[in-house]
Length: 228
Image (cartoon, rainbow, N blue to C red):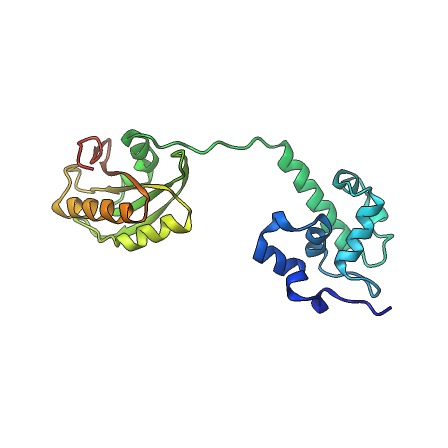
């Protein structure tokens, strides 16, 4: 029987295309392993080859992980390079199981926001504005610089801020920027940005928690001052 290679399969049956369309959780173990080894043998494609290997392991990934390079190389279509790739993938899976999931930082107050950004911003000779991206539990997803300017000001596009939030699937955000002058008092431009950001965030159902202005060792919080 003529071998049907992966490239000859329908596009929605190819492992790589299925992963891109559906995510890795929807693929079978043979499909995931087929992506790793890339190709099969002259008589079977990579998916069929890995189905056969896993069948010999009673479909148990732990058993597969215990196979030696020599044992894997006994299969037609698996050479040392593919065998090493399979072993490496199994080892990474084992190490991931052993590692403790690191809990994300929380940002539930202006002090949390200040401490998150202080080392990044307090010594800069120019203004930078960052958005803090948070999930529904107010745990930090990450942060992005959304504006960089001179000594006395910076321009922030609220559309860019919202874009970063939506791309990160954030449900809450906070702004933070520095004042190189050392004067923590917000400017009129800061007030206008805070107002525009609050309105824009409300329109797309994202919580706008705070806008923090920081200097070396001090900060101002719009939320703490009741201005949000």
